[in-house]
Length: 486
Image (cartoon, rainbow, N blue to C red):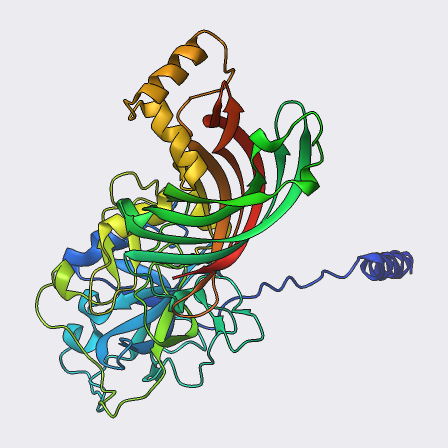
């Protein structure tokens, strides 16, 4: 009886203890549906020694990950140029975000490894084996073949250069990628200005308006320099010699126009070769199918606007790896000098031609291009020239001592002795400023700039019996110009 009591007590204690134990929560880890093995040919394995993140090493002969699809790649003319496996690496059982295009020429396909394998009309290019055999995962599976990655793609709302199309409401609109620049630069600008008129005794601020016409030539690296000539209507000023003790009101004194001829030099912070901000691509009438594959950075497939009737059958390179100039798709290359690429090698999409190394260098070395996006083109400018009115030309002639008659000699002697009190410095006009251009059509840019001009003009005085004694004075002008640039 005592034994039965002890057993009953132990049973009760065990039941109570089991009831008090917390339930063990089942740990569920989200795993990918497949873990594929991609066998890489020995001669190509050196390209795949790192994960797509770029910093972790791995075996380049067998890649572990997920093959999403077989993609048939086309160029912008809708021609089939290559066939690739779209692959995602698995790192710590987690798929990485970037996708990698592995050309078939780099892959040891299963029918080649197992000659007796049965295949369909695709010849086994879409047969993928499991990295390890697990219940519920087939040893060999078929992946879909994407024969037209551009199907259903929509044209982007933004222009290729990263700026929205600019519109004036005058049926003038453009994305900066459609703007074409010739070496010849032509501009017509309206000018508003504020300047001071008068002499040392009497001075008055005035508002002015006029127009400037510029013709120049684009040259230098990336055509950033523009050298040319500016013809300006100038400003209307009084003749300072007409200001007297009894006539000190400038409003009552007649004015004359001082037109200018100026040698002009511009330096643009962004060149005129019009490389888009977000990708190094050829200019083409294309739209975007979506992000695709690069080794460390995503780029975009460029899709043709018009479909062709060309076959969409897979394109398989045969034999050894093609050379750089023959390979239109993913390419391993050494960065151009000056490019700081922490990942080492750069993988990029190519189509019919190879992007010039100089374009790569320029794209990486222009902070202004990144900041302004290649659409707005800021510039600085400088000007040097003369006014071409009659009074200023007389002052220039006196400064250059081009007259040799007795009157000129008398005036020079008198001015040397201090009897005239006039300035015979050569009337050089100079100016500088900054502005920007922005496309409004395929041929024209809107142009706006703010600048300063120190304008040297000639006046005439009545002195020691002479009625037309030249003198040079300076006028400070601040100006705002708006117009169009070809």
